[in-house]
Image (cartoon, rainbow, N blue to C red; front, side, top):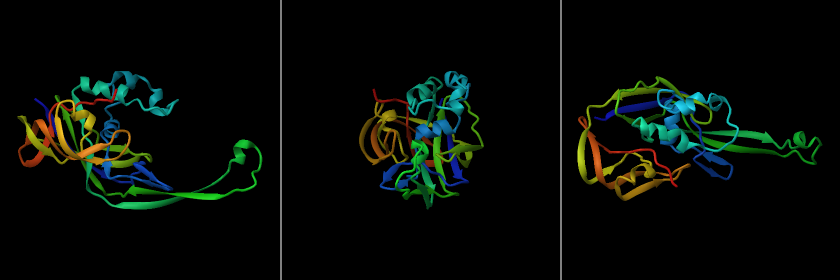
Length: 236
């Protein structure tokens, strides 16, 4: 029997990651990708769930190449029957920050350039006290951290976890899931009919998804319907 955890993540610092770049503006979408949350919750480098990555201590402090290894890092969670959904904002506010820098290329070239032109950029970040909800599905009890770090600035956030009532398993039929989903993780086991797209790297998410397939419901949460058999899957 699956165990479902309802998690509420409250920011104690501003949250930044570049969902999109519009000229000099780097914008953070108020949606948390499930790949990122899997790292944030500690499933990737915890030897209880992933011995290969956990034993590679250099990974925690230094990455010799800027190449994501999502498939290598997240596939072991399928073997543990653990899945983390994307997170959606319950309430949020945005803050704009401006940063400036100077063109100091002469430090590299070891000679003075003709011009030293100041420049700037802006980040649109999610403000402290914003709250997100996400779900963790597992086949055994889990202990999740109370405090986590998230985003480019390793922002501090508090995690509140509540185990949901035992899910009711419904046979395959049409239903709508309003919670954001990773399309790669649901399209193999469900027939997706329609959805809204959330454009963000590394895999765009979908929400308000109308689909045909098996799903879970929970007592006390009549609007919540979560697809069954979600797993981390990757484009070949």
